[in-house]
Image 1 (tube, rainbow, N blue to C red):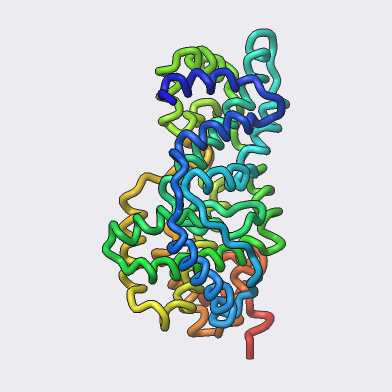
Image 2 (tube, rainbow, N blue to C red):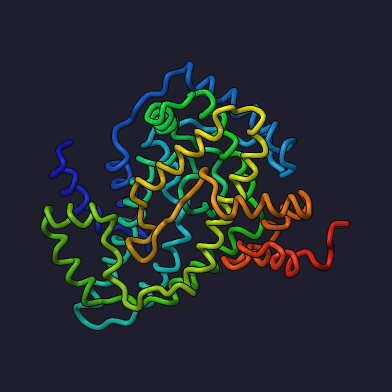
Length: 364
């Protein structure tokens, strides 16, 4: 379908029921993720075999509980986008409620009410669609998912990553399977969803809808060229809200993301060190990849995804220091509850973190 025809179809989807226009989100995510691409059966069989091994090996090597029966689904980019379109809905649901309750009068009110769901749908579709082109799995998104959806692997992205960096593809497959198993186990903790939703609501509390900016956006959407430009900006969302987010508002979610990625990398390193001789090269390639790629916007510019998954970093080093000084059980305290997450200051002061978190139980 020609590009201009697609944009015309998107315009027809603007008026949909609900606070978030999921039909529009789905159309846009499908467009950005590209056409359906078949997966070679032999490659699927090999990855599934490695994933089953990872599901058994990771808990044994790390001590972190994991469900060995979790479904592993291999998909192309479009399949990844389709299955994860609502995985990050906690980011926009509070915004949807805020827009729905926003005061308005006359023309602005008549514009704001129908436009809000369309903008939120476009934002979700643009974000997930762009993610599907880059990510190696859910561990690599820079944001945790709010609900369990199984282990979903964009296999073609993994193969491209291994080929681009001259890595042994079979080792990359096992390494990624371990990361997915660890990520799924950590995000599945009972406190994570509640924490994500609460922090998302706090973020929304720091911004105000700008009805006049939305009215201008609405006018530009009548021009397919301008609409295309907006979509290329990941939804062009930042200018629609006043009151830019401050570091204190972003701090809790950034801490969660950094700890999830760093603690996850630490656990994978523990599980993989004796099995993957190319592990240092994989970490180096991941660090280079994150340094060179553009980070998708989490909310159209309101804040950015700053992922360093799989490449190590200060949290990974912090976990290693905690283990060396206080043992494995102390490391597992890090992800026990949100209050135990290390602050940026504590990443440079493991003793300070230990005094706050484990002083009452020094593990012998």
